[in-house]
Image (cartoon, rainbow, N blue to C red; front, top):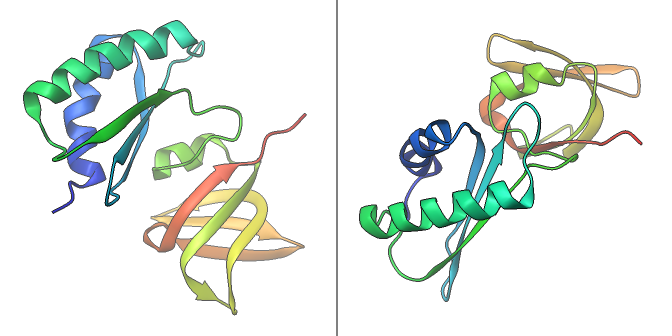
Length: 151
């Protein structure tokens, strides 16, 4: 049985807050051999490798006690980076006007991948503009999304 991302986030977030960090997102990949628990942390002025190391040590200890993930797993703690993944509608709202890549859970107009400018977040929906065409996708229908960095 696999643990949900929401359950993991609810366990991890209080630690992040206590350390002055924001829990940006959690990914858990259950595999037959060693699973991966990837945790993204952030703060307004950014995080460095020392922040990730310190958080990883604290989180590792907490997870050893709580034991939400059964079996062997690798814990990875990272900054979300410039091409940050988006996990919540609030996060999408912070990047209105930016270009995003998103992948849908199910095809729409015979495709699942879209890249365009994030126009708005409206009542549980994400609005993007791709080649002068506006698309409105329900948040629940989005498998994953990332901000496309500008250089």
